[in-house]
Length: 422
Image 1 (tube, rainbow, N blue to C red):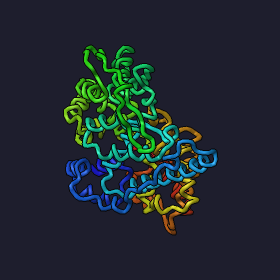
Image 2: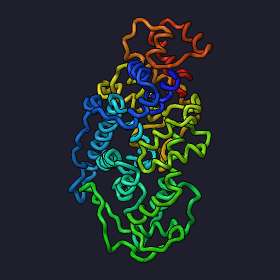
Image 3: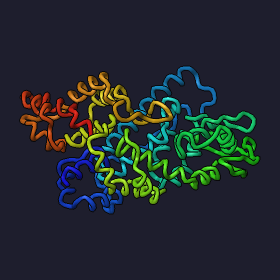
Image 4: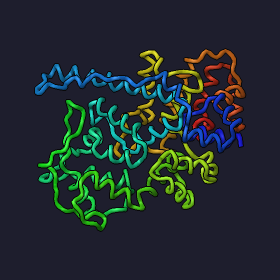
């Protein structure tokens, strides 16, 4: 049961501290699942890292900025992006409601939108707040379909009845709500028409609807003909049997196994709780298939970094400028920098994180993190306690036992297979 609890806490959050694991052992598995997915106490830890308030975009209000103003704005936008990224990593580290934070991070990867193209961190942060404020997937889908960052990311502002752009309509069905192969090209074209008319007010950081640019004609989508618009299209897709099944599969993919398909009974149980994603997670954590997937899921780079910060008593919000830059660059080299997923498909999973190049980067990164810890004495056993690792394999234990330098020992522990795979 203790191993089951450690697995649960590792998967549900970003890495439990020894005290959190000890508390879970006292409460038991079922009570811990209930607390994780429906916390009743206030998140005192999150209060340590309140949301920042961003200044307006530096080019807001300038209709014809000079080259110098553009150059200055580029620097300011990068600083703003760096600020919200540091804040988010810090929030993930100090928050008590780890499952909620992990779920919002999951949704960021699901509705994958990157500041690399959106450019304005204000829009990315607005999307972040929208995800946090969505009570369930249905509410979230309605917010996202007119979210200025997502609309900009998928060129929705160029989608008019005279110049259709199908990017957003295609991804809405393929990646966000139904899954690949659940629609035809005719459905994509019709969905694109339904989404016409939404424009972006960049200065105001908002979208607005232009009736003149909207195609108000009838559209046939998945066999039904109506005057679909953005929100009636979302409502229609939410009612498709495939939608809750697809979301259950995506949660399974990220929380249980990126290689094995979700068992039908597990999916059916999760579908029953749709559209409440926290309740869907509860069904997943209570399912025997979840516990049977132990030892098969590779930590994503952000999980690995935030987990190390939590367990070593460090905070991204208190890193020196040099270490913060190193950390953000390290996460980017590992392939997962928050607010900058590589494509609309989000981040990869599984063995994608275990390349030779990533191993070298992770070892160096672990070494820099270890240098922040003032450990005078450390053994493989005490390190396993700190990192909440169940046990070392004989091979890893032999390597750790041969190391006497505490920082070197910690570096090897953070880069070990036992720490990377849950």
